[in-house]
Amino acid sequence: MKITEERLSDWVSRGESETQEFKSSTGQRSEAAKAVCAMLNHKGGRVIFGVDGKGRVVGQEVTDKTVSDVAAYLRMIEPPAFPTVERVALSQGREAIVVSIEQGSRRPYTFQGKPYRRLGTTNAAMSREDYNRMLLEQLHAASRWENQSAEGWSVKDLDGEEIVRTVEEAVRRGRSEDPGTRAPTDLLRGLALTKDGALLRAAVMLFARGERLETEYPQCFLKLARFKGRDKTEFVDNRQYHGNAFDLLLRAERFLRDHLPVAGRVVPNLFEREDDPLYPPLALREALANAFCHRDYSIGGGSVGIAIYDDRLEISSSGSLHFGLTVPDLYKPHESLPWNPIIASVFFKRGIIETWGRGTIKMAEMTERAGLPRPEIEEIAGGVVVRFRATRYLPPTRIGHDLADRQREILDVLASNGALRLGEILPLLKAGATERALRDDLNLLRRLKLVGCKGYARGARWHLKREG
Image (cartoon, rainbow, N blue to C red):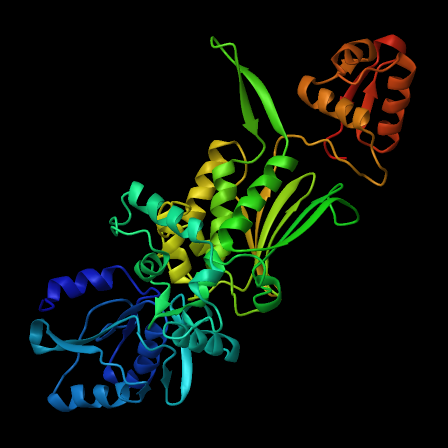
């Protein structure tokens, strides 16, 4: 569609942005080409010649040579890009020039041998680290860990029942047509898990039996830990497993059920007990699915991990955020760009992933409905961590001192009921205790700065010190 003066004025009225830049004249064509290079490496955009420093469309005298000079600078961008260069007629015989470009399909791009990236309304030199990352992502589209042949592996090394279960679930959910066969070889071909008759590594990661994985694919690894207190000083439980993705996902969910507290409450008018998990199970499942789909399997010592503390739960995976995504981007609608698209596709068909590009948004929505803060996502050395924090009080297992079950129960009682007298606490303890034992426990908890006391003698009320 031809650009009119009215349409151009509308664009200019919106000001400069990460996808739009103004130049007063083609005398700035070198800076304009740098901007085009940066936009190619970002989200695309446009550069408009003929806008003065006050944001007014003033245009300039434009000839065929003017356009040719701009094009000459754009040809200095490597690899070759083909932006659209359009002349826009303005009143009083002047013209503006609009250079438009989509996001580059062959990133990273350079101008005069240097790569640039778009930062807000500026064009910054791209760091070597960012350049190498973008180059890796470009190569990744054609050649990556999951789509390489799994040498020495055959269909008989895979779990045929799991393959059939995956396809039948995909058919049931309407995410795949019934192939009319249950032969594993045919099903794997339909799931894009073979190439020229050979199994891909993605097939091994998804369906392999466990015997060979530990030695040949040690990265098919899951680490599970429940710690005492709020740091890694001491374990309550520590487990490690090698297995295919579905087996590891099942083990992870069992571990969460074993170790996460579940509060019970009676539903009004129904007189039925309703479980109230500390963290929304579907949010945890989404985080786990993302970890398996987006992690970097080329890291031989990599893994997916779950760490449960008294005040938080962390799900970690090897690798980093890719394709220029930042943590803030993950909480906004964004294109789904899984690092392992074949694995992600099978997870989607199986129903483990419900929607594309909304995983982190869904987690935030579910935790918000549960009265929890949205999950924190952090890039650490060699990995990504998704952190869920509890707002409900969790009695600690260790605060510079090992706590007995009854002492933790006392904290839980105070958290649920507020300040109580000694005689009011006693009947609420399931473990039972003498008055003297209860007083000893409370004095210990007070020394640990976990509880406080107001009043004297039998009128004293004990309360929780949440800051402890």
